[in-house]
Image (cartoon, rainbow, N blue to C red):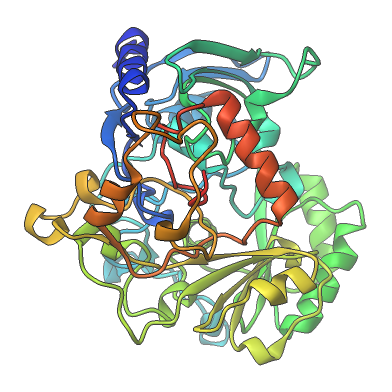
Length: 465
């Protein structure tokens, strides 16, 4: 389907801006579980969809924000290309479904008993019901999330060439273009990656794409977490075709990708065992947080409370995402950890706050698995209309104590945040690492410049924004 809703969406934003009404941007709803609640009228962008241009020889694709991510990936796959930052879907076909995996006894590969200890994914399919993914291009870029290939291929923002968006005034703006060398003015297009819709409503996005590697091979190593981190960093400094490296708490997994000669040479150099199961399903499970590790410390899947209106389980340890220097030492005191990105990403289940620990190590932390429950969510039956809102982050400050965004003070100057606080019960608002005052001030100035009345996804990233 190809549909242009630019004028309709711009008119809705302009009307909301004039009246000071908050807007909650909605795409496919696949990432409603990632952050803080947003109270406001829904601005549905999922119908604004369609691939506008695709030049395989130029390695560039441009599509509207509501275009399904799967549709874009399918078009690229036909030409042997892909989105090299491996964006997660967090959606049934490739993300957070009802079960991490379901056994398929009729499709089990033959695996020697000696290798079964690390082939837990060999007998499973990621989505036996073949349910369609609801992830969209706009939500993917707005969240700025990347998969296992991120340290080796680049982050989502590195692939953004240009965007067209609606700012908080209802104006349609264009930043960047469709070429890598774009030095005219500030690079606001890449700033949209991770902005969670707080700086503008994405309309179109141009992305750099890359040829898909001809050969992929996953190797398994019996290493401790500390030794795995050491090896990952050692290998990262060598000319090896590594495209992913993780440790699941028991063993290390390294994915090689490239031409066959390079992959085989690297295999001979590194050693290890060849992963005898379904390597594609394994890495998909890592990317989509469906590996068993991500479920073991929580009594509910991430976002369940947001999607169904049920409260956060008191006994469930939140899932922490620690972004650290790759060589940061392994801390066994934190308990079981899933290490990804060659050591730069550590996942931990913990009831304790890890903000200070992450900061001391030179990184930052995000806390997943929180519940933000609308008071009428249960009666309404859950779903995106009464969910917590799309991906986001928060500081430890409560919504009730958050100062207003510049430009929103005074009657009729912005969204009625008092009303919002009355209609949403937030059991915990801390999601992303709190910002130092100077950096928070910069964020607020940027928000005020693009969305002066603070109507776009207010409070999604931080209560002050």
